[in-house]
Amino acid sequence: MSILVTGGAGYIGSHTCVELLNEDYEIVVVDNFSNSKPESLNRVREITGKDFPVYKADILDREALTAVFKENDVEAIIHFAGLKAVGESVSNPLRYYENNITGTLNLCGVMEKFTVNKMVFSSSATVYGLQDGAPFHEDLPLQATNPYGRTKLMIEDILRDIYTANQNWGIALLRYFNPIGAHHSGLIGEDPNGVPNNLLPYISQVAVGKLKKLTVFGNDYPTHDGTGIRDYIHVVDLAKGHLKALEKVLNDKGVEAYNLGTGNGYSVLEMIQTFENVSCQKIPYDIQNRRPGDIAISFADPSKAQRGLNWQAEKDCHDMCLDSWQWQKNNPDGYAATEKQTEVKA
Ligand code: NAD
Ligand code: UFG
Image 1 (tube, rainbow, N blue to C red):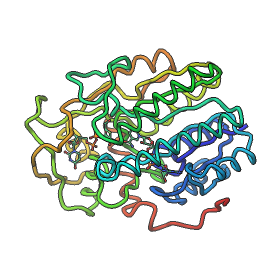
Image 2 (image 1 turned 45 degrees about the horizontal axis):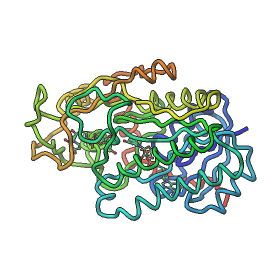
Image 3 (image 1 turned 135 degrees about the vertical axis):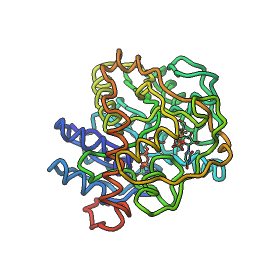
């Protein structure tokens, strides 16, 4: 029996593949490599010493997905495949709705056909929208402020409807806060296309000399130093949360949302300071206006995941920055520089 990992070559997917293989799960990866490189999966093999099938396939392609289910005894799906750039979703909403929503509908349709009804889905803290105060707990009213966020909200609703219609399904909706960091080996990590949108990849690229300086978006928020506060979570802790959620859906029926965060918030200036300390590099920065759409403070109430999944984050801000730095230092150009041919099934 295998766990099908859609989007398994991506940032969070590749770290989750490592944890699954370390726990002796058999896995099958489906990825169209629209935002990743096959090299990440070579590195997963290198870290774990284990091999697994990889299909270069698009979840929009129902025939290709059907072939994957025919050729493998799929027991459950961890569904990472999706587009995730908020700004791009505003300028190209159709691409986001099609890729994320139609892709998920296809996947669920094929799951239904093969009577596979266990899924762990990558949702996001973005479904909390513009809240007045943190921490965010799972029962808050949900809201989306951009097309990307709306795809996550809609998919959560679609999965709830699927469960209502057939109560054999077991579904975990994992709402990630801000994943950062990298595998301790320094072999896999976040490899954004072009100039990064997110804080940590931007800081890392300044530290390694690829970018000149960071822009801090606003120092007039109602926070202790005026900069935005987020709940950064180490990607390996996040990956381990997926294994706990997988155990849950394999053993239980139902549909439940869980926050995956640490419950602690750090400001932009605190992140810069910690990164400087661990890397011994200066991070030059400018303060500019707020970035439209950003909220002041976001952090999780992670107690439901602790109770329901027996999971909690273990790594602190120092570990996260150190592992991000280790990855960036070892791989200043991400996977591009060392990409080898990965064996890919058509
Ligand atoms: P990522 O872009 O690194 O990984 C997504 C993977 O899915 C990529 O390998 C990409 O090539 C693949 N993919 C995209 N569309 C596909 C399609 N149609 N068919 C097959 N493969 C496809 O992103 P990530 O950071 O690893 O995020 C994984 C998931 O978690 C996404 O759904 C994302 O929305 C969600 N998420 C991410 C964050 C974050 O900050 N990284 C926060 C909350 C939620
Ligand atoms: N920031 C800067 N400079 C930068 C980048 C970010 O000052 O160059 C600040 C932001 O203003 C924010 C903090 O750093 O205060 C974190 O920003 P990120 O872009 O790293 O993360 P966000 O919280 O804005 O966004 C993340 C995900 C989105 C998701 C959102 C809400 O990237 O996909 O959380 O859950 F929608």
